[in-house]
Amino acid sequence: AWGDLVALDAMAHEIGALWVADATGRMVATSIRRDPPPLDISADECFIAVAGGAQERLARLDVAPDTGAWNFGWVRALRNGGTFLGMVHAAVPAEQMGRPMDRLS
Image (tube, rainbow, N blue to C red; front, side, top):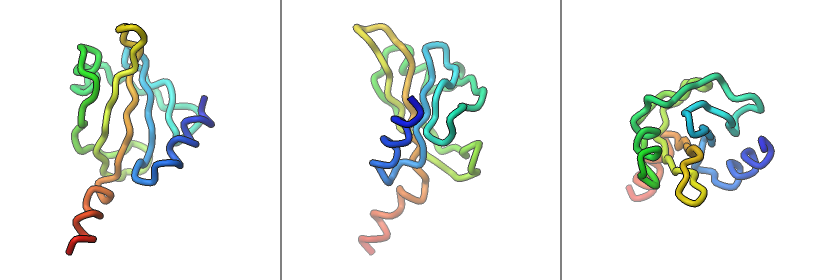
């Protein structure tokens, strides 16, 4: 449910948004808004990788369609008894990746 995604997103401050796609690559949920945009990610290399058996994958640097912010993504497969159900994409703002280095300097 949308409220559950929002709550999960709020628990991890380094995550900018959570996105959920079904087994066909159609976006079915996001923590950003109640109604997800009509996105088809079936041709995305990370979707293809997890649909093909990978458990997780680091996604390329990309621009968020809603905010215009640069994000990396961490993708995990959703499976039930070996059947691929879809994937979860945790968008991590690129600026978050540099914060640990800033603290070291």
